[in-house]
Image (cartoon, rainbow, N blue to C red):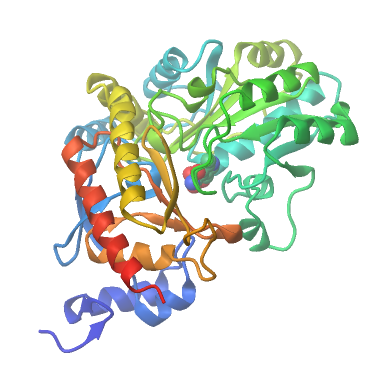
Length: 444
Ligand code: PMP
């Protein structure tokens, strides 16, 4: 029976919408919008690059949900491996050197696929925990090395590193920091140039700086990647000054950019790598911090007590079993190569949109991380960003993607599952073509 509508949700769903409004405080959402309109969509199923909502409407998941569903939705074998592990040993602790096979096997697998010399992993439940772990770890490391004053962590403007206290404090995007009033101490942000980093070191003193952290490709900030040599220069500045380099591979890891890890695009090997998301393609909550042999050896040689850091779910057996199967799928289906090839298709599609539409400015992509800048003719941004309208129109037409409007940006960002095919890329581009045509027509 349909008697009432809450913005697209019919009375059958009325109860769900009401319960959502009353009981579910959503992450990174507008509370006002939720109270006025109820949940934007209620999803029930996923298959490949598609999500289906409670009304049976299909959507292309153009951001792999949260840049994480790398192998696509509906992978039965991931469900099966989770069920098997849960029935056998759903959970056991990894504290006090207790161990279990899924975590050991996954740690070994990660050592095999990560760049040379990154061979030891500390497990977490997600990206924020990974980065907070990395920040504590680098400070602990320098303390063991007799340099407890090396504690500053330097990140880049426009960076995103998560929402735990350390991760928020390291995030260069100000709106995320402004959510709260006081942050963790000793976090600093620099412009994305080697000169800016050098100047910072000059001012603050290398003996006060523990680490530099960067996403190989900035995701939440709007899919930005630096010139090819930027990271090489940063890495050598780090080496000259005894500063550890942390690569935040939470989005870029596990095939997203067309190589297994984002740093491979830039020819560098970091000292520490944070991972999450694509490690399980979102089928279970898992993250990790992978450290170099050198750091590991120093920890072994210098440790004077317990490693006083550990989450209940560090090395969750079920999550680790899912991750192992997920990595097996990525390798078996050659999805890293597919990400590279389909990334080129997507970029070609963006370039075609650029020719067809005056409001499309710069377009860019690295593997299946891509962005379209929205501009007025003559390269000037619209006074009111157009991306919210574009995103809403896309949603109507069955395409989910995101608009970035932080700090004056007006950017559309995309990261579809890395098992996407050519036909599906074209479908995405065609929807965008229709959407941009409609939005363009309505510009006053
Ligand atoms: N680092 C980066 C680069 C991210 O994109 C994210 C999440 N979008 C995080 C860290 C935080 O990860 P999580 O949400 O799993 O805590």
